Image (cartoon, rainbow, N blue to C red):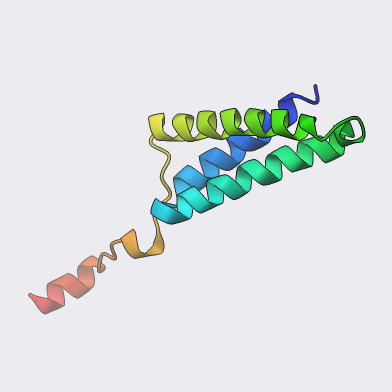
Length: 99
């Protein structure tokens, strides 16, 4: 069960990152998401008491989850419109007055 935590957390963060960011921001947030997911899973499960090598395994699992979440978001067309992408449409009453 502990091995699912970094995968699920990575998938959720991956889908959110894909849907809300682009470019260099997406890359930077992806790296941070993998690090946070892997470290969180290692510490919460207590595996670090045995060996910090488990962190490497959890980082790999978080990376797989992140990639899966991004792929799922891409395939489903998950893209939240940025504020600058929203086109404002004037109400029809204003259009009639300008004509």
